[in-house]
Image (cartoon, rainbow, N blue to C red; front, side, top):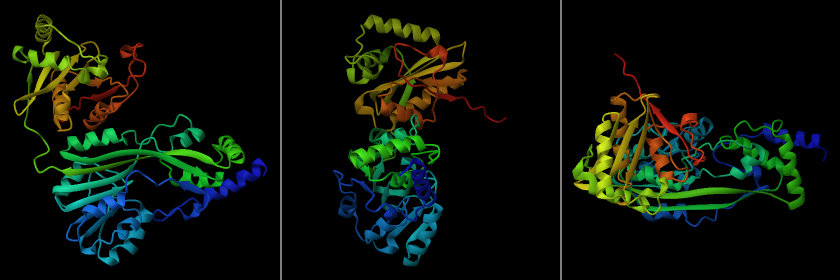
Length: 424
């Protein structure tokens, strides 16, 4: 076929790209997606689901999977936010007595507190704090998610340089978020697999359906790159990409999510604890000291003298939970720019309990209270757990200011939060 004949064919696929429920029959025989994951999502649910339990399927799609579970309808609820699927679910689920609520905001789900024994979510949006609110004490959250790296090779093939739509969709980031929200992680797994297209038209249809992965995609805009895909299929018989999935099974702990934490300005009584923190290679590896940063007692005294002399423009806090030392948080305000550099470090045993969120927010509050206009961090891009924390406390990734750029660390990121002026 000539290029223009291919364009005409592909634009026909483009014009008919729509879906009801989650039905890919249009691509039958033209596309394959490996679903042989190392876990069985359905089996995991069936193993714990009992007839008397209240079940919620968040972002149920067309309700196909939910119905396949055969759970008693009077104990079954679902949400959906995509308009076409909402209408389908009204036709399919409501007549059965399933409690369907329209919802497109995972942080505001229209059900009462502690309404469910189990919440399931396959490839839907999620919010750890809201899921905690909805679950009964000891309740389970079971989710299989599409990861941040899903189809990235295909996206780069047609739209190079496109930003990830959901950069926090990684197992490390979501595990940290649920641990900080007061969940016990029972199972956490991640997998990558193949996705294959046997004609470019099938890819065109797919790219329009999964529009969040291919923003701005069109046949005309990406025509030259689609022709290269056509060459690949003519040569190899197929076009291949990579899927990304992860599984998380989490239990809502019975105790309150927020631990009993004490945060106070560091003094001489804290120096040995701080010294041991800095000497820990696991704690210090992301700041360039994989073997730790040993300091003598005299050096610690000198450091504390600097902190005390510069208060309140600089301050350092020691963090304790139920009397046990956990780690530190810190801020230092640059009087010229009004920016406050933040830092937080915790022992591994203190992570995943909500302590980091409390300690970092406290340091931010103190920095703003003492005149900072902005607070910022510049994390190592490999420190996914820290990056997830910064996003949870409302910090936004931006371009590194020129005066903070360090050529010795060219890949480091920059996140900041601005002081919000209260209405008077």
